[in-house]
Image (tube, helix red, strand yellow):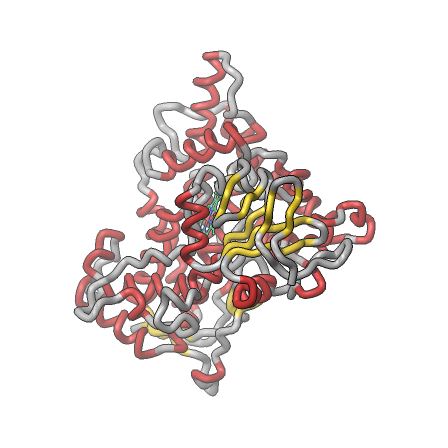
Length: 474
Ligand code: HEM
């Protein structure tokens, strides 16, 4: 246990005593780091220092500390944390690892384009419902027999992003589409693997860490695809008929080139932004949907109540609309609880201080990496009645009305909060209610509810273990 560490006028909060070179890595569960970091807050408090190798990280745990940093000091805690690998592959372009004015411009452009303006006549909502109808056909084709829904849910969710970004969906069997999914999934594993964490701390070890080479090769392959889409559209975009985010970007690029200004609307940003959206928008939402179906099987009484509300508010025939959500407090509460309980981005993405600051009495220098630990907010025992239990009442009052909760932060908060939050909420509601309207979900015969495992697999996104389900037509 070290007392606050003092270096040239700065003082960091206490934390576990670091060893030379490796810092605190000896006590970090490298496959489930969120568990170690959450546990350490019991001993060191809600704000403490953790040494990743020689690098001091400020760990923020619990709703109050995370809110104080990301919301009350939004500018100071709103920079994206840098890692050696992301610096090498993104160099500050795009959104997720974007920096400075370029990041601001790309984030603003993407948010306003996603808001449905600038993408022609087809609304985002209709893109989602059309895709879900295709997904329902695949579920039906299994005729109530057990199947693993992972790949097909991933493809459907990914197609929503494809439709928005490129203006087109892919056939579920398209080899190029499947290849993109495979390398994306592989990189999600590789980027958070213990080997990659070692590379980011000790880059000189690259020779002994093959994971870094593989992940870089994947990202180059992956971006080739986005580059080819951009080149196909570049010369044929009609500014009166913009069909996608890529079209809107190209049209904006042409406008800016006329003004002859130095513009962030360039080829490099287009490629990184579209690959960022494809990556960020696929895995998180599809993982949440897989949790949703698993939880419905595990808690048939909750599933039954959702079915009843759908029957009452929408009926069996009409296609659900996002508008219906306000009349469906129980389903809304269930979806919120699914997101809270499944905690799909447990570590959050790394932040970094943009300036010197004082936080809870500690003087923290500019450039300090910050971990606003989402798992500790979504499972904060001062905020939730039964943090470790799936319990839709967390979002309901005694009259059964939906209640907003401040500590519901699966999308994080502040300047860097998830840019796809509204899109993700619309997708989750429409996919979930459309599937639930058509099917009852049950485990394969012989599997008891106790045998359905709710423990997550390791990775940047916390996913359920592979499972089979039976989708029985209602
Ligand atoms: C960032 C969660 C869906 C695009 C993030 C962050 C979280 C998150 C925790 C990091 C925020 C931070 O650094 O403080 C989720 C969850 C989703 C989801 C739980 C679904 C259930 C989406 C979708 C898109 C998207 C559908 C696509 C439009 C992004 C982008 C960023 C981001 C571009 C980086 C923002 C920036 O650095 O400025 N998301 N996300 N996300 N998300 Fe999402």
